[in-house]
Image 1 (cartoon, rainbow, N blue to C red):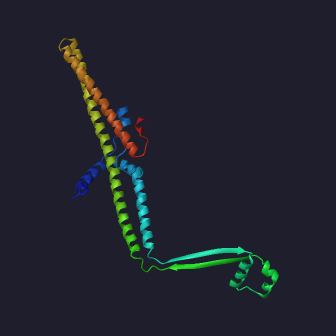
Image 2 (cartoon, rainbow, N blue to C red):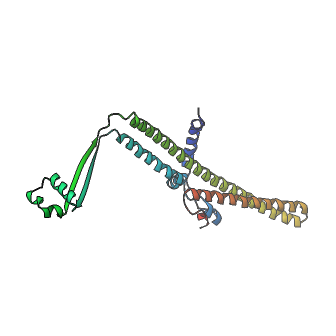
Image 3 (spheres, rainbow, N blue to C red):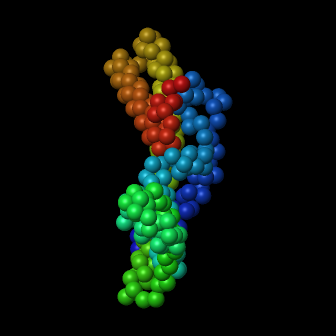
Length: 256
C-alpha cells in the first residue's frame, strides 16, 4: 500500500473536522485579538486558496491542453477534405493564350496579330477539393491516441495532487493560526494572573512578609511570560501572513 493511500483516509477525517470549525467570533476580544482573529472558516479559506493557487491554475490549463491533444489524436481517424482556391491575372501573351484555351473562350479574333502580340489582361479563378481517407499508417494514429490517454490521465492525477497540496498548505496555515491564537490567550491568562499575584506579593513585601529576593524572582518570571506572549503574537501574525498569501490577499491585511 502506497503512503498516499495509507494516509488519505486520515487526511479526509482531518479535513471534515476542520471544515466544521466556525470562524472565530470577534465579540469579547481585545483590539489586538480582533485584528489577529481569523475572520473566516476553513471552508471559505480553502475555497479562496483553491481559486487563487497559481500552480493549480497552471495545472488546470495543462489538463485542458491534454484534452485538446486527445481530440486532435482522434481526429486523425476521420476523413479530411481540404478546399484550395487561387486567383491569377496577367497580360503575358503566352499566359493569355493558355487561359483562353483552358476557359474555352478562344475565338477567331484572338488569332489577330494585334490580339496575339498585345492581348488584354486575363484573370483565372481556380478552386479544388482535396480529400484524404485514412486506411493504414503503421499504427501511428493508434499510438498517438494511446499516448494522449496516458498524458491526460497523468495531468489529471497531477491536478488532484496539486489540489491536495493547496488544501494541505491551507490546512497548515489555518491550524497554525488557531494554535498560535490559543497559545497567546493562555499566555495572556497566565500573565494576568501573574500580575495579580505580583501585586499581592508587593503588598506583602512592604509588610515584611515576603522576601525581596522572592519578589524580584517572581518579577523575572513575569517578564519571561511577557516575552513568550510577544513570541506567540509574532507566531500568530506569521500564520496570518501565510494564510493571506495562500488566499491571494494582502499579507498584512490583519493590521487593518
